[in-house]
Length: 359
Ligand SMILES: *Cc1c(COP(=O)(O)O)cnc(C)c1O
Image (cartoon, rainbow, N blue to C red; front, side, top):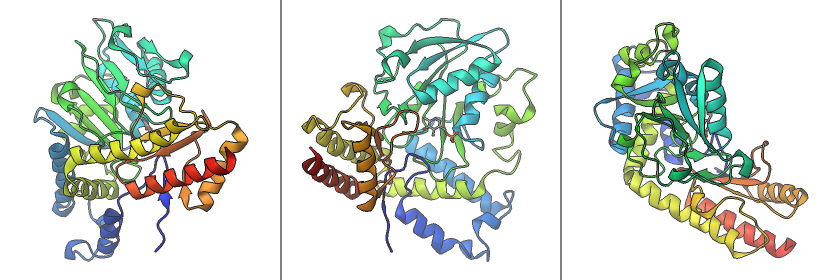
């Protein structure tokens, strides 16, 4: 079996143990004579899978009882639309902190259906840093404040979250379960599964119960959080396969020691790559040091030709997914929970070798 060093940004590497378990259980799940994909979403067997996934997330993230955990489709992108539809009542405004491509998508979507106050924007600086709390221009009567905890494309992340007096909503798509985050500081968090939780096609929403009830009356039924909360994510057919893989992934994280252990491993992996970047001028890390992401490490080389050569030679050496996002170029290594230290060390060794040959 040949497993490649996978630095894809999303869909991304999954833990090998999870894939192997899913493979072993595929034709005959739990003696039922069928795979999880073939089970009714309303069967007690599937309910046990979904309950396991929810319980796993609740334990790992210490989600308080007053929060619902929902399993929805439409990715994190549908949440960009659902958040303002549900949480911003008619005639009111919401605060958005514009730290990068994803935060900006969220705010553009919110502008379609109502008023938005951009509390800070890093666009003029090419999204290379997270703002200080003192720079935020928050409005006291905003319906909520939205931020993105880790910018997957720009490679920056919040370390300290701002204290705000209005509900705080966070897009955690690319750093959920990667580091300890006090979920109780947030009124709502959401994440597409395909970075740290499982495959694409599933979005996890964690929200205070009272927020789920806020939707204005003209919100389509399907787009109301209350609909999915009331029916325990079974209002319509959910992505049963992705929920099953989420359950296995949560069990894998727990077996590895939980989120604290993930964070330790991720800090170590990131330090290996930033160590190479900082050791010479051959590499350029475009982001502010204090804002560096431990999930998505981005860098530039002297020219686009050299960057293209880096990506293609890395591929020949068994390392894929290193081309930066098409909107920004450069190089990006996504090193989510499932990416091993061994893969990161292989990349670091390749980088040093590449520098010797081309520096
Ligand atoms: C990937 C990503 C998204 C988009 O997710 P989809 O599932 O493709 O809609 C949104 N926000 C962040 C931070 C992401 O990393």
